[in-house]
Image (tube, rainbow, N blue to C red; front, side, top):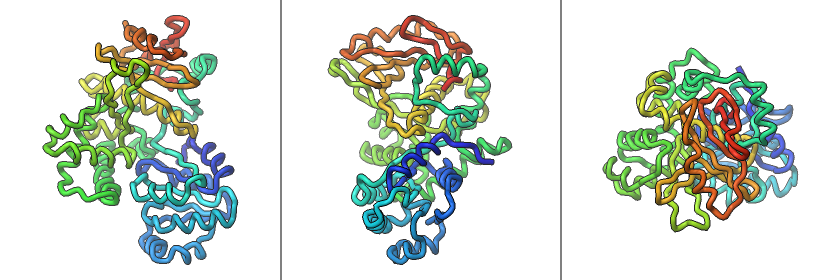
Length: 404
């Protein structure tokens, strides 16, 4: 069963204006599936997962493109970076858009070749697991939409219960988990981690102790939505901070986690500078931290952190799937006043709190700290399990997360 992906329009628009489109993201998020779905007659699909084809691409890239001329879909391009100079030559010679659609993980070696060979010739797009909007068959604007669009969406959407939201959080966003409801979630993610270690990690670096590396991943999952403290992580795992940083870079490059930077403005001497760390897929994070049901996750100690993680990842997807780069931060000062999310758009700061409660009280108590920054404050509010979209005051609204 194919579920329409929001990034489809972005891919086609990019293909009409760039000779090369490169779709990156974690494994098993549907990159090759969406490109094959969009494939027009005359465009060949080739995967470098095939050992014979991969070896031909590496050993004789010039002959490879005689056998497989563009327009072409090249899946898993990171396995044959030798092709990049020849892609550049073909692009420069033909001067046509839409010649190559590529998929790959953002490994160091591949991105180095992209920057060296295809600068100005390639549209880089990010793809992750399904967003909530995609699962419901609707299109989501980059969050937050205009108030009128938010009101229109609320009039069409039925509110979701906390149990429904946490079922989605617990299962995660991977296509196979979504399209196969009978899938054993624990077995799926166990297999995912093993494949990730055997293929993605080994493509980037050598890990001398895989057990220790898996423990590190679990520690990061347990600290999702928290400030990143590499020194504390290094002490707990028993490695030096340099190794800890290298391992975290691997998780970021392969799309498993991302860092949310701290906002720094004119009061930068008063602000905390550490980023926060988030898992992109809450199903994987829940598996790594041992939560075996949505009900346990909802009622357990992890419930608030994984809820914030899910909300932030949904917002990031709403930007990336529309082909836009989000300017997203969090705010915390040395007085421990924190605002979970700040979106910088059109020279305005849009502040949002994220609360697991259906009726959050005092949710706006730290907004005055942001309002003191020398930047115009725009539309914001509280993202929560509330069933209703309601104004709190002229500028801030109570926003159900079911509208993401």
